[in-house]
Image (tube, rainbow, N blue to C red; front, side):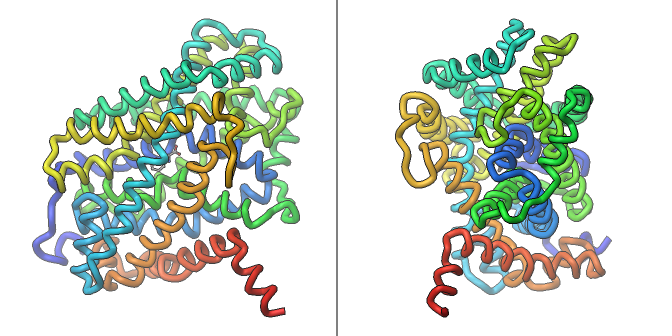
Amino acid sequence: MLSNQAGDGKRSSLHGHWSSRMAFILAVTGSAVGLGNIWKFPYIAGQNGGGAFVLVYLACVIFIGMPVMMSEILIGRRGRRNPIATMTLLGKEEGSSGNWGWVGSMGVVAGILILSYYSVIAGWTLAYIVKSATGAFVGGTPAEVGAQFGGFVGDWRQVGLTHTIFMALTVFVVARGVERGLEQAVRFMVPALLVLMLVLLVYSINSGYFGQGVAFMFTPDFDKLTWNSVLAALGQAFFTLSIGMGAIMAYGAYLPEETSITGASAAVVSADTAIAILAGLAIFPLVFANGLEPGDGPGLVFNTLPLAFGQMSGGIFFSTIFFVLLSFAAWTSAIGLMEPAVAWLVEKHNRSRAQAAVIVGLLIWAIGFGSVLSFNVLADVKFLAGTIFDNVDYLTSNIMLPLGGLLIAVFAGWVMCRNSTSDELGTAGNVFKTWRLLARFVAPLGILFVLLNAVGLLDWIRSLAS
Ligand code: PHE
């Protein structure tokens, strides 16, 4: 194979390699599939009016997400270090500059910020395991289920406690470096999650409001689409695929030479998108059947799915399993969010993995209290994008990840020479040409255009011109 022969003296990673191609795909899928698909996608789609947003999101996934993911993996595999060191090294090696390392640094910061609130929401899912198992939702009305949610997030001590538990679980896994065990977990979790989503889908189809849900998700009304919604769709594409911040780059560093980057990316992107769409199809009919608001915000999943479970026979069982799986999915994603920071501390500052995990974990845990309090004590403290949680989310998903993705695409498309990238992708044929076209032009220009429009810069220029 091409990728084996070319480029002598290939590097190898300090942290070892994935045991197989499947192991890598499972790890990346584990990172991609998470709260982003089931918690975030439906509520963001709801807030942005459905149809048109979903279409833009799908376009972003295919034309921007896919090439950026491939770029990240190939950069990671070529450098075989943490994202900062890899970008610094390759920047110099490709005759540009070591300053590219700053892209890696931004990713480390983004990962820390994202996990700070991700862990809070993951804590909600932990709490919902207990609520489900104790039958809190059985026969619940929309008002009762809503009150359960409000009562829980309104109490900062409960939210803080579950956030703490989730962070502890994450640090535990990262410290021990037991990704092997997680491979096994993902192998079982993703299919199981798919099956449960199908169970929910059947329920939704029977709710009598399925058509309305489908129409909401797929009938585009482009008049309703603002540039901010387009940016939200772009940000969601990055968030859900775990790209733009080095998580996938860090995983790519452990990828064996012979694995096909294109094949692996396609598998992950398809699985991730399928789960998000399924979640939407299960949730929106319930929203309409129960007279709820699609634009209700972060509580959407927690206010809808328990209603369905509460009425199903075997609902306690299904509901408990569902929130267990969702917590697992969040757990495997959280590990990816921490990996760049931890790998960096280990390599650069000679910390043991355990020490690094604890240091990073404590930092993230503390920052997380900004989001814990955003739903109760500080719920009325609003600035820029809203609460502290809203701001951290907006800054990371809508600005840092797209910006990181833009720079990563430019790096792979323009800074790295043609031979280095075709060597990593293992081909110089049509797949390579398509990737290169997307990475050089479509992704960077697309991201730039959306970012500039969302901040109103293009409008402003237009107004100057007229
Ligand atoms: N993709 C994950 C999800 O959908 C979140 C994530 C973002 C994980 C960035 C790692 C890096 O839940």
